[in-house]
Length: 474
Image (cartoon, rainbow, N blue to C red; front, side):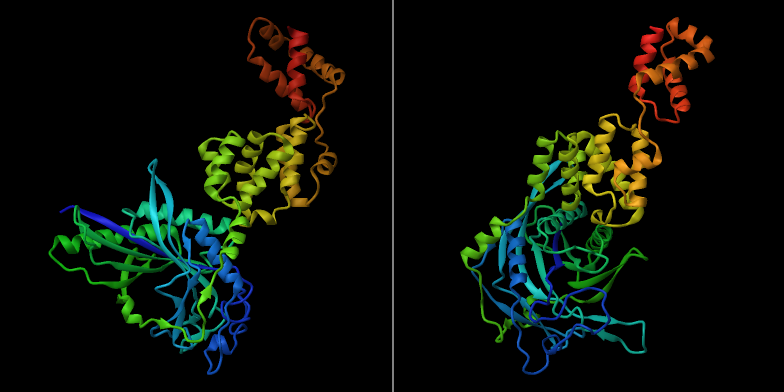
């Protein structure tokens, strides 16, 4: 039997707030265990939560970026479940009245555009962290407890792991552009749960879903979904019944394992949190946030293609992150040559970022320095090959391009008289090549240019050399 794959994703993104969602504890990652805790984090009797306005603003930004409707009134609820990593035994989340709902995201797969629904975006608190390998007992770190999250829930509109991958990459790009989360998957600030089911083609009713929990890389999401499709297909083909359950993906074994039977919403026993009043978001606040929104990825892609005359591949590379896009724009505007800027950014800048495994803001070769370097090449002050040497030296020595050109003696020689003298000597030393050139073997131009570069230690201006060859040899 032929089956249709149905996939829905739940993304948890930690918000870049300075403090937790319901208290004043810091949200910094990697600090000493249990150094950021308080009665609210620990759920002590009498401790009352207080809403973090910055988290609300960030949730609204995410909603606007995905064309959601923003509720003027939303409710926080207690999600009751056995949480060994939440001291109060329940999670404060939003259920039937989330802050954002009814949005969408357009993806491109195999050259075709598809619109995927965004069911809701709601605010909630993160759980703490259990450490299992430092003591005979499991240890608990409260630092992450109460870190603000947005949960982005898609409609079950995806029909392949590739569509899920496209959705994840585009959503991550948007979230980073609007600067509400760093989306660092290694640190757990961007996590994904995937719900997947199969149904016979043409059947309207959804099949029984299984949930793949807390995957922290997009490639693992694809592998896990592909694996689960085959598992469910085999079960159905053999007359078996899919059991609704939560699964864990083991990247070492490339297989899933059962974590627990999957709950329905009523199993969490949601009820409104009595300690938190309804969250009111006035129109004036929404409009203020809307007016402060940055240019979103799709708009930037369209503008880059038109304004800088870039092909689609270059556009996608240069807009991959907002920091890279801003870097490129600065270089392009400062040096006045978008093609040249794009070539160096996509080549040398991405190379050095990969080598150093750092952020572009950490580079010594800042955008203005690269622009100055490109201007030196464009005005024939230095050759392109010398430019590569200066580029590497900037990153090593943290100096301005012009200073390094002087210190390294890389200034290009364009003095016609001096270069003519060099060429006359080269012609005298290579009479047979001169005769062959005059006889029509114009390929020898490269030979003469090479000899000139060797004689001047790479400082000769190739354009001038070519002109002199034409002048002296015809």
